[in-house]
Length: 302
Image (cartoon, rainbow, N blue to C red; front, top):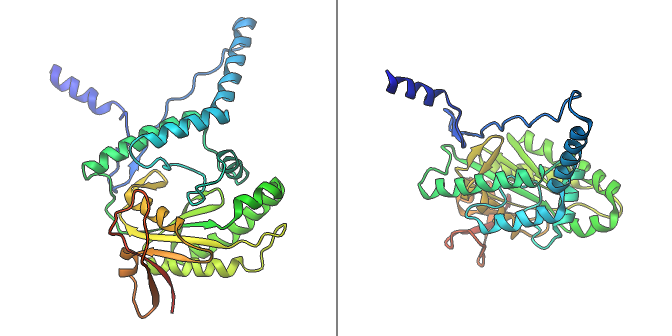
């Protein structure tokens, strides 16, 4: 009886880490509710100390120095340090403070240092899962990244109002292009976007339709042009996000693209009809975290 009681208690206990759902996705554990501040019946001095503590905790959570320190820590951990990142993956040289400001203007918050620490733990879990061949999903998907060329330098001079207006215009151009080609926008990454599609030809058509929709947009002297990259693989779905080596490959491929260029991995090119797509292989492609044998092609519709 005691053994059965112990097993029943274990079955009823909540999971302490990510949980694999029946559909192959991974659900994140629900965080416990935060402690309520001292009530009205508490001593005024206690309430004041609680208010000061809460204010200081919020300030530390959003402090740029703390966020930068956590970001440096995550880069040293195994796994993908861009997991859950609402910032651009393509512009490696930009200032971290600027990218966070851009993300917040677009309504994308990092959740602060506490959130980043949690993402670091999930990052390590994902890396361990991949080493045990458990880090991938079960469905082939095309992962697409896009990024605005030269955006960060323009945003420094243009100011918040113009930056926010441009981000809205770009979203209004690219999101319908993704939806009309049977894709799903996973998240906006500051001035960039991550989307998934069932077929790479749909991603190609979405990029081409999105480029056409961007024509004619000009804000404070800036005309938006995108670079893009895609890869076919089996990324692992975690909540509303995707992660894993296939996401990393798609992001690295996009980083190598030029203005108005779409680069595709060899796996993505192989899944498209050669009668419909023109593909020109990039002879020199090297990127951190990408298999050395990976082939990359510049692609466009015939």
